[in-house]
Length: 231
Image 1 (tube, rainbow, N blue to C red):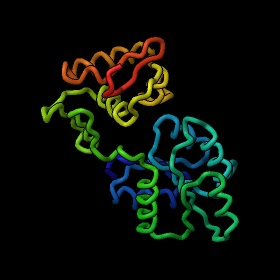
Image 2 (cartoon, rainbow, N blue to C red):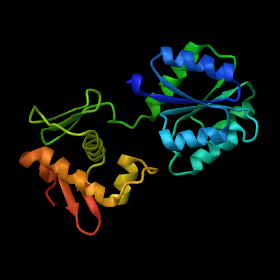
Image 3 (tube, rainbow, N blue to C red):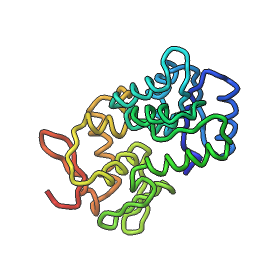
C-alpha cells in the first residue's frame, strides 16, 4: 500500500526536493527531506524509510560514497536507493550500480517517470509474503487489512504482537534469540530490554489461545521459534 510508504529525498537543492515531494505526496507517499548525507543518515537510522532518493552530486559526501556507507552498515544495508543523476554517461551509472544502488534516474525527469521507477523498485525489494496473507494451520494473518483470524474467527492483537506474529509467520522453523527479535521487530535503534520480548510473547500466546499457542515455541537457552511442527 503506497499510502504508508515513506520516501527520504536527499538533495542539497531545496526546489528539487520540493518538486519531488509534491509529486510523491500526490501519488500517496509520505516524504522526508535532507540536504546532506549526514542529515540523511540520522533520518534513515531513526525513521527507517522504505526508499531513499539520493542525489549524485552533493557537497561533502557524494551520493555514491553515501550509498556505499548505507550498504556497509547492517542497519541500513537493505534500504532501497534510487540515485538522481544529472549525468547520462554510462560510467557514472555503472559506479552507482556497483555501490549497491537499486536504480538511477537522469535529471531532468518527469514526476510520472519518477513515481513509476519508485513503484518498480519497491515491488522488487518488498520481501515476498509481506503483502500477501499468510496461513499456518488455520491461523491467517493479512498484512494489508491488518487482521488475524483463527479458524475464521478474529484474533485481537496489539500493534507489537501483530508485528511479532508477522515476523514469525514469514520466518518459520528457525530459532531467534531475544536480541535478534528486538532488532527485527522493534528495530535496532530502540532501547528495549530483552525481557520485554518475553512479555509480548506471553501476550501473543494468550491472544492466539489454546488452538494456536503451540506455534510460538520456547527454545531453551536460545529464544523462540515459530513452527507448526511440535517440538
